[in-house]
Image 1 (cartoon, rainbow, N blue to C red):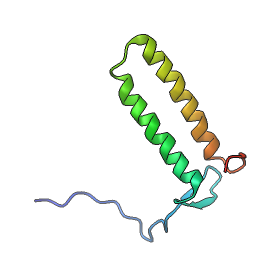
Image 2 (cartoon, one colour; image 1 turned 180 degrees about the vertical axis):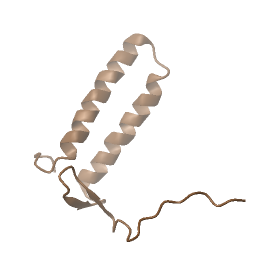
Image 3 (cartoon, rainbow, N blue to C red; image 1 turned 120 degrees about the horizontal axis):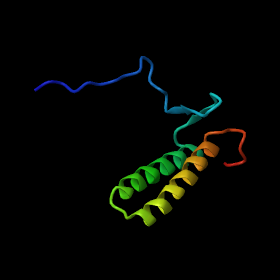
Image 4 (cartoon, rainbow, N blue to C red; image 1 turned 90 degrees about the horizontal axis):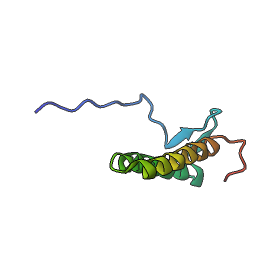
Amino acid sequence: MAEPDVITLRDGDGGRTLLRDGTGLSKSTPRVEALGAVEEVNAAIGLLRLHTAQEEDAMLLRIQHDLFDLGADLSDPASNLA
């Protein structure tokens, strides 16, 4: 059986991720955990939209737009979100 393709970083990411301006944060900080949660909810709503009627789909789309805005705010270190 063939080995799956694996992408590795030369030095690893050290458990850190970058915000929009390049500021590095630990992946265990509340801000980064919130970013991940927002992305997961948004993905779940995207799947749900595949199975909804037009009126419900429009409502879910508005929620997704709000989640995209929230993700942008969370990724901006200048925002007052902690």
